[in-house]
Length: 152
Image (tube, rainbow, N blue to C red; front, side, top):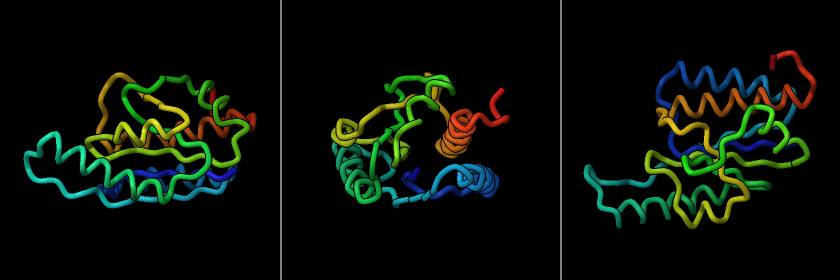
């Protein structure tokens, strides 16, 4: 299995990078893992809707260069799954791309191109924290599928 994590922008805080690196290492026992961090599009201090829309379209072009296989967009309007549900969703897929947009999310056009929209919660999380949570849940799903001991 190949798993691509695509997230717009780099993690700034070392503790979030270290957490993602730890889960990446753990996931690597089950799959080939690649992480891509395309640069966010420039936006002025108080952007208009049109400027945001243009920025999201530019980011979608960058993301598309990395997204392969079954594409899962993380977005608040997506479907929430249990850990077991996520493990079932990805069980038989040979290549998956999990896609996290910038602070303004992902363009509607790009989300329509994805195979599935996943929501982690109705709550809003810091971008960096959401990335760590995604890595942890993918690791948990892989562990469930391998009948590992991590998931209780």
